[in-house]
Length: 182
Image (cartoon, rainbow, N blue to C red; front, side):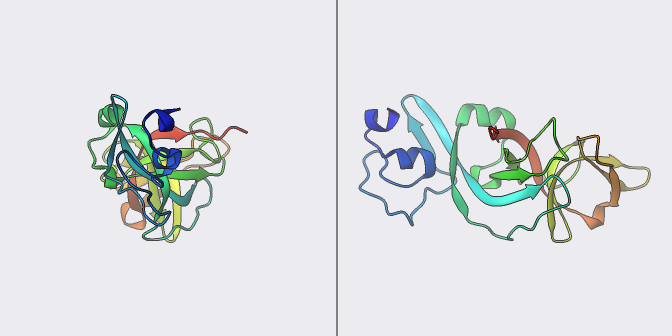
């Protein structure tokens, strides 16, 4: 209904392809830049890249170093600014897989990562790399031992402590974007 009312293609609203307001047809190869702001009615939305990278909530998964977005999630700009001050190109929506973070996240959920938060300054949920593996885990600092505690929210999994130098923080998970319905 929005697409028809504002004379745009539904693909432009959902994935950044098609025809936007006052535009001619866009080819499928062209995408909206991730920093593009979109107005629908009186509301402003920010297009956040949606990446084909599944972050494991269990033993880890491989991800590409510089993946291209599959499409975009449109997130209300006003709400987005209440949870992050990062520029849209420093935000990413990624899928999580596994069950080690259950009760917080479930297999197939999409989360929003703020890639400007690359240090563990407080306890929280982070996207991280350990070697070639990519995880989403709750992290807390053990300042006395200079270790990072890697915590699974699912009590069936044990926590671990790693030296800070053994992991690379990709960003802090700041929101659930979409939940998969079983």
